[in-house]
Image (tube, rainbow, N blue to C red; front, side, top):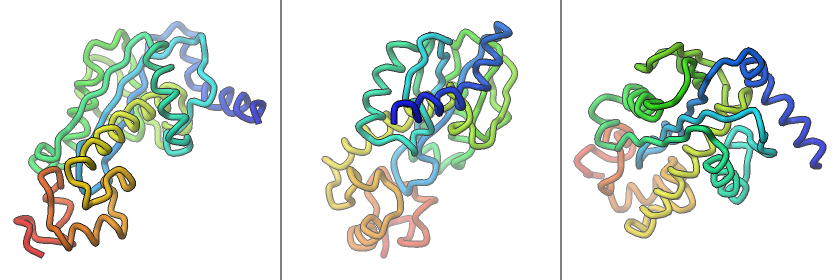
Length: 210
């Protein structure tokens, strides 16, 4: 099993290794939470060193919650730069999900000691350097995968906190995604303050009418 993870690590670091070999200073950027009906988007930017490589770093969706929490701490201890920024539900409703995500990504990258930014599926950001979008980058690039883990863990922690405030929606379990449980609660109770009004029109009116 460990051999499988070592092989996966060699695979996911190919892009990074080629850049490390040229001495290019680069960061990985990713987000978590573009699809849910509520809560913030979390965007992370990390600059990872070539050594030590962290076993099990992968697309956050392919890593268990327990493993993600462990990797979060390892990444924060190992990274040369790590920052997470949020886009609130209000900002998402005001400027749309893509623009809110790009703003959070750009803010997360400010201060990163690099000239190249590898971004999952987005190729234009307001950052001081080259932006290289990589489709499915969180599964293909070690640095983007590390950013995906920071973003996912940060957002999941916030949604567990939200569950304590609004337990009827099951946020600790669904993390704000449109599960059957969440939609049923939304129709029964209406939206709470962290719901994205522009995302829930199929289920309730923006003013909360059901």
